[in-house]
Amino acid sequence: MPPKRLTPTKRPYQSSDESSLRKKTKTSIKVQRSIWNSKRDLDQLVSDSNLSTSSISIRNPKLRELPTLVKFTINSISRGFKRLWEIDEGYSFKIAWNYLPLHLKIEIRQMIFKWWGSFLTLKILSEVFLIPPHLYLPGELLSSVSSADHIKQFIPPSDTRSAYTVLTLKHASKASDIGIAGIIHHLPNLESINLKGCNLCSSRTVKTILNKCENLRKINLKGTKIIEKDIKALLDKFGNQLEVFKIDNVSFDNINETFSSLPFSKITHLCLPGTILNLSNQNSKYSSSLSSSTLIGYYPQPKPNNLENIIKWSNFNEIFPNLIQLNLKGLLIPENTIINLNKGLRKLILGSNGPPIPIETLIKILKNQKDTINYLSIGNIKSKITNSGSSNENDFLRLGEILKECKNLEIFKFITDQNGSKDSICDSGLNKYSNLIYSFGLKDNWRKTLKTLSLCLPQTIESSIFFPSFNIDEMTEENISPLEQLELPSTNIDNTKDFAVALRGFPKLRSLDLSGTTITGMAFSLNFEYEIYF
Image (cartoon, rainbow, N blue to C red; front, side):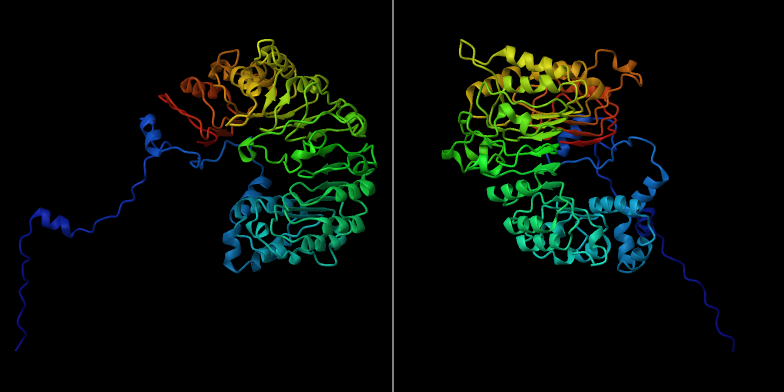
């Protein structure tokens, strides 16, 4: 008997609402609204985002120029390094790495350190990135270096040690004095040593340098534990050949003995503690590296100049006749003191913050250096007292006029203590006349040369100083400002809307820092082509 034919059963009637529930729902990803994907209502967006000092734009700044194929290659390898390494634990990468020319390796190493510093272990660094002639280990980029107790693995293989002429081991804060000395012991041909921020570096390392590095020309020992006798030993042996000499946080008890091997005619880059000549014995524990008076409560008064010292501010140009860069951060100096420097200085660092520096001292320095200086960093400055007991406006005017004549200035930093210098004359003058220092230059010669401007001042900054003398819409290639970095942290701007309009006059701007700055009246729209920090 044939099987019975099954009649299809009808589905019960369903309403349209019920059928819609049976449909497969698609998941949608909601993108949070931000100032980068909304064109309107900027005021509300800024308010909603709670902009703070930790809110940073991730948009890359506009390229300075059309990148070449080499730059694209370097960028691609650097950005993709982590993925390339994780494919087979670096086996293929190391094979390909061996075929790269030296100049590409050096550039790629720098970029990989920048992008993947926290990923790079001591093992990876020692196996791949020890590239002669530069043993390059910047702890500020490499977390494994900054936290390493033992650094023996950074001693290069014996067949390449003689090829190393430069050692950069910075901010390795836990590396022992013996460990650092051990690396230097195996690199006898070093000409340049940078141990900045190696907190435990001390006399053992200095002794090794004295015994092994006969060709030493450059040394940076800022942020280390070296003492005065170490300085004397280095200067006695290398003083006639050193070109770069940088130290800080060293207390000097016997200047004449320590610097007895003077003059130092080959030194072009010099960094010394700002307290080297005028710190009294009762303030011997004060460190010029503590640049903010909020950390120590006050800035000590400078003692008078000692005429018996073989190094004096008046004969500084005879002791160091060929200076190009001079760093005297935290300079402690009495009034009516002249620092004599030969012409040719390009970089001068006296700030930021720090004890008040007499304006007259600054004027005397800059008068002779206005044709060459391209980098200037100052902090708290102080005018002479008028008959009425207040700051002298004319001193600020004179300094501003001198700075306006610095036609090659590319970097200008004027950063003072946010909580005041504890000097009433200094603080009063900065509150009233700070703008006289930089406004003349910004309106004139600096517009053609300045690339970095950093201002942190108690006085309100007028947005009008950022406008050019011509209409912004009439800018040409000849009068475009080269400004790339503008830093105005913890400041007050008189008219934020006008300031934003003025920013249109800086088409090459790549970084804008407004952290801690009050942003008001932002009823405008900007197409940001640079990194912005709020």
